[in-house]
Amino acid sequence: MSKSKESGHINKVVSAVIIWILYIIWLLKISSIVPTVGNFIIHLLFLGIVIFVFKDDLISNLKEFKVDKKKKILRIFLYFIGFLVIMLISNGLISFFTSIMGIDLAKDSSSKALSDVFVQVPYGTLFACFLTIVFYPIVEELIFRKSLRPAIKNGVLFVIITSLLSWYFQVTLLNPSINEFVLAIQTFLNSIFMAIIYVKTNNIIYTISSRMLFNIFICIMQLGILMFS
Image (tube, rainbow, N blue to C red; front, top):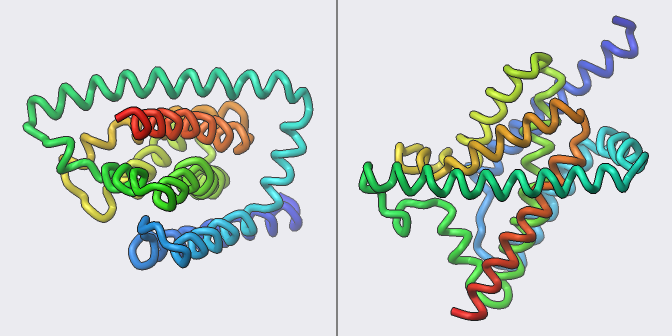
């Protein structure tokens, strides 16, 4: 390995360590989904920090994505269809496990907190849409996929480790119960899907964009339920 490549690899490792430390501090001490102006600004600042850390990779991936862009947009749409299939499968699995384990979806689901924010029109709805469509796809894909890929070269190992980390940190870190792990099945399956996409494409734009598209769909569904309920 040349000195320049070795230096670049070290820089990526250091960046990954720093961003993971910041992310854990963020989750444990700072992160909140209360829809206030201050909280929105804090989320924007953290989003900016994460983007800044990975700006070179993002610029490189964006340049590569612009080549034959129509074909790649079609692939993102196909990935969106994949998300829909996973949603149907995971809903079936969650219903099965909750019925045999006696889990109360209304009480035990940590995702219910964000749903409760969404119905607080207008500011809660706007903040929940920002988190769902912009913040989470960018921050989580850069941290769980982009930061770890240089350290985990084996594709299968990468899919397993990043999916388990996503499953734990995104949903169950603050409430590590069996119920939460069951209710986070969709998060786990989505993470597997995203990790496979990233291994195949080596371009984080695919995972970020497809997650954004799917989350736009989810927000539209929630808005429809909110309007007609």
